[in-house]
Length: 127
Image (tube, rainbow, N blue to C red; front, side):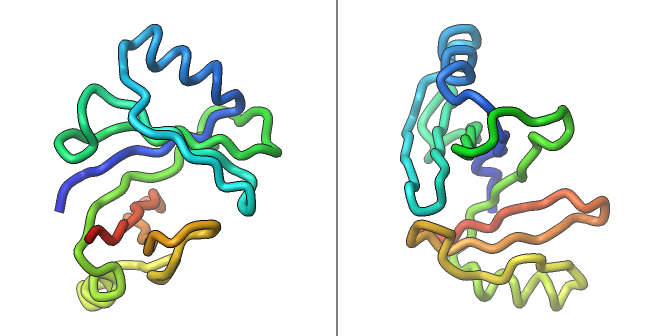
């Protein structure tokens, strides 16, 4: 396993992209709108996602701002099989809070687990 990305919820995607790319020098790696789910995902970083951990900026179209603390989303880990990973995590005493299945508005299979403090960790099934 390896860390893929950390997700932050943002209230103004263009402003955030300007900061991360223009101010911090990251590259916009990919961006995708999910009209059915009413959100946009933009991934920024200092290198290809296949090699380095990146930031996922999530823009929920109907939420113009977040309070500090509510903007944190999750850390993501790549797994070969999200269904099997959930079973293994449960068997080890871990807490699965969203069983493996397709993400809302897309085909990618994901799941979520919580650490002992309640921080969410996303499992993303990779081919």
